[in-house]
Amino acid sequence: MYNKIFMKRSVIYTISKLVASLLTLLSISLFTRIFDAELYGNYLLFVSYVILICSVCFSWHRLSVYRYYHKYKQTYNSFLKTSYLAFCVIILILLIFYLLLHFFVVRYDFDIINLLPLLFLASIFKSNFDLNQNLLNISRKDVLFCINTIFRPLLFFILSLYFYYYKNDVDNALIYSLILSLAIASLLSNLIILKDTKAGLFNKDIIKKFYSYGFPLSGLFIFDYILSFSDRLMISHYLGSGMVGIYGANYDFIRMMILFGMIIQGYIIYPELNKTYEKKDISKVKKLFTFNINIFITIFFPLCIFIIYFNQSLSKIFIGENFTILSGELIPLFSIMFLFWGIKLYHIDYIFQLTENTSHSMYILLFGSLVNLSLNIYLIPIFKVLGAAYATLLSYLIILFISYFLGRNLLETKMNYNVLIKTIFSVSVVIIFCFILDHFGFNDFVLFFIFSFGYIFLFYKYIYDSLQPFLKKLYF
Image (cartoon, rainbow, N blue to C red):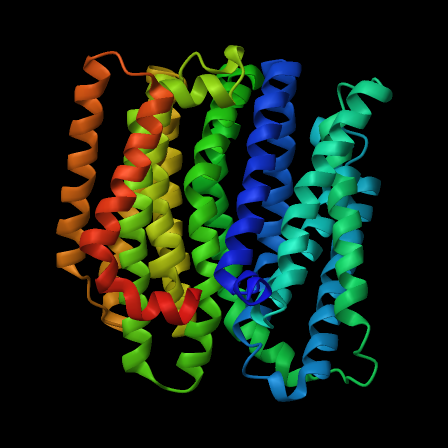
């Protein structure tokens, strides 16, 4: 009985992502205490460049593979072989690009040029790892997926400590650990996924489908990168890498707190949406989207309020003292920002992907990235680090509204307003109760539990029945 319960996808996904998130929290907590803000900021800038390369070169391919898995499931070996050969071609193009830079631009003493070998290695291994994770998820190899989810950040954490304490390589400890952890995890996944694909043949039709579907995604990911990471580059330009470290530590902490659950939800519901859409059961697709937004309302909205209310205590626990200077102002902004972004990214955007209207997302993000860049240039000199947070929050709000109105023209889904009202009521009750107890001097840790268990009680009493049918099907 225990094994049967443990193997339920919701349980193993939640446990694995929770462990991975705790490892990330532990990493942030430790690294913001043993590294100074400038060094940590330099590492965050390196990660930003890696994500830029992944966004431009690889992300469109990965999402194409994920989207068309069920379409080509009957010729799985050919699909897999074609997918990985296409990935190798992208690597070859990157290598040619690097050689051209090496021979024609190397004479210029640019730091970014000197970092390119490490950046390309990190980008290739990260993209390979992400591709493998998507394949394990969509093929429902849940246990392997979840082992990887834990293994990669654990390896990164261990290697970082090894380079820092035993190799005394403070400057490069995080960068080397990132590359090695991604390399080991991706290569092990390759062995597992590709061991039975010898019989597969290269299929040009699959490549054409990837190109027609995925090419617009290149622009989408570039503009997404501008929205998500240009603030760090602009802060570095105006205020230096030290402020990038402070901004990035708070940003990554809140992103992990809020988005990790949304990622789990995506892993659970996306394969079901893909399969249902391919069967042309549009009525059920709409019900699944309604259920998905209900999860955002009942889980992630209360989590956002929890983080805002307890932001001072949470920052003291998880972020080093030198990085919490602006936490009281940044964390509430980031919490609202990631709630908006999560709804757009993990709910509305999947409508564009299912209906093969990915160009819509690209144009929305193009507009949003231009707004974000303009606001960063205007607000950072005035409000310093907070200006970057204001700029990103406003940009996310704008593109959320645009995405909503365009998305509902493609697939009209309904929101359960009864669930929304009950959730707002439940959160309001626990917040008022915590506020009263706080006035009488109750410890924050006690208030953590009162908020959490108070909301869980009200959820099961007033909201659970509305979500029960899909909760049982997808999670249990």
